[in-house]
Amino acid sequence: MTEERTSVQKKYRVGVEAALEVMGGKWKPLIIYHLMTGPKRTSELRRLMPGITQKMLTTQLRGLEKDEIVARKVYNEMPPKVEYELTSYGWGLKPALDHLCYWGESHLEKVYGDKSKVLEDFGGCIE
Image (cartoon, rainbow, N blue to C red; front, side, top):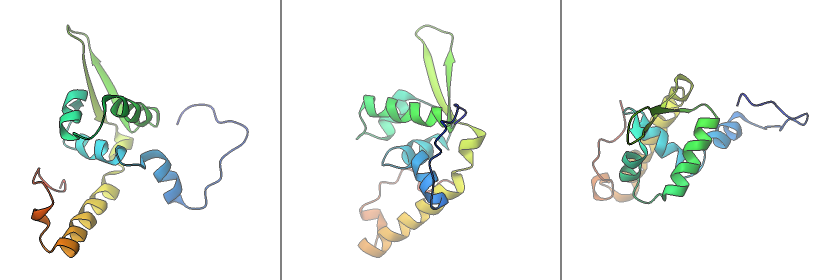
């Protein structure tokens, strides 16, 4: 985000387009959601998202770091320890993710009648 802009600026029709460019896709919103509960190591994120590959997680974290949504903190110890956490800028996405979470749970209720049949109970939406 702080990189120099090229002379040709991309044009957006609506703000949602810009937001989806930064946090769109299957994994980035989930990474952000899990980081809302506190800093996480890569291995913790992998446990929370069993369907993601290490390569995909690394790629998504790098993208979020480039866009200043997450910060990577390296501890000077052996073995090396790295944690990811939301930046204050990244925390600005919380209201949007809260709305998506609540809408998703309502959608599951509508489709399945009882969301507990299809939604793992790992805490639900973050308050």
